[in-house]
Length: 487
Image (cartoon, rainbow, N blue to C red; front, side, top):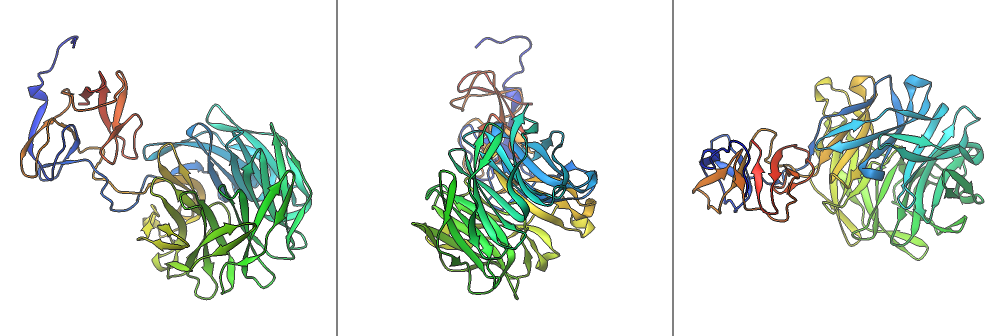
């Protein structure tokens, strides 16, 4: 190897310390408070939340929805109370445990209600649907395109209902097709198929879903290639019906009751591609507990497994956005809700699907602003497949209901921004005196590195090309196996 300039002695860049736990050769290490060293690892101690970042601070926001999309960015849409209640979008990107946002862009210059958002992964387009309060509460939708990775450009608005609508939901279903479901001014529920062409949408004929009731949620099962719509019937029971899209039309299967008790208008759902199941979370009337059931599509119908409780106290699920998502890194379902048994704090809980049942772990309070005794409201989740993190967007009651987002890591770690010390130069047993290659030394125990690339310590102890939630530089690769440790 050729050296340029003054070279620090390798010996001077080594640290000797007692191993706390076994150390593998070439492993990333931290220094503990007692002076011992340990391997960097995910602690399994549960989720951790980053710092909330503001994307809208002019006044209150509502009808918050978000989706992960193109070029490792995500988009949030909302009603901006500080700008005449206009429909607005903003693009964000995750870096470690932080988030950066572009400039908000208005998509509807009028009072905008009942907003929903989805992403067409095949065409790299975004679809927002809403009620236009500036035009007799008609139902409209627009197609968005990501510009410069930091803003949305929205196409012309297209009416899907020339009349009053509310509780709108939209999902991309494949082949440039979207399904929009909504309730009209007569309280009847309907569905309509839209076809995307560049930035325009054309619609098929309206199809009835039910004779009454509020649309609660819409989810797409990519395995069965069918959507499922959840809605309240005339007796205010939550019903679910499958939706089959064919060309520009949609047909609905037989209604299936979500539960035996009357359900309120708080029901959210997601698709688990690992088990090919649909998970519905909801709040029961009377006890107001958090419940969930696993749904299975067979043919044109859906059936549900055993009801499981994820929170025995009064809960609130947001009536907009997506408070239930699938986390592919954990192979679990994440549910966000407000927990009345814990001062209405924003809470996250993970569920594991097994067959037609679901079981839950320990709930996690991620309300960062606990000192104000104010809550995070209308929380909506997305999963960032680039950073392998969950992003929660919400309005902050403790800060004038401004719009904010924060990153949630599913597992804890023993890594901090300050305790990384270097790499072990060999394997050591617990209690042995270990040699740690610290800043300025060259660790030769790596593999598959790219020379000239900077690497970051990951929270599970590996190294990677992008920062994890805890951003720590490991060093710079000089060959496939050698890394100059960052000082």
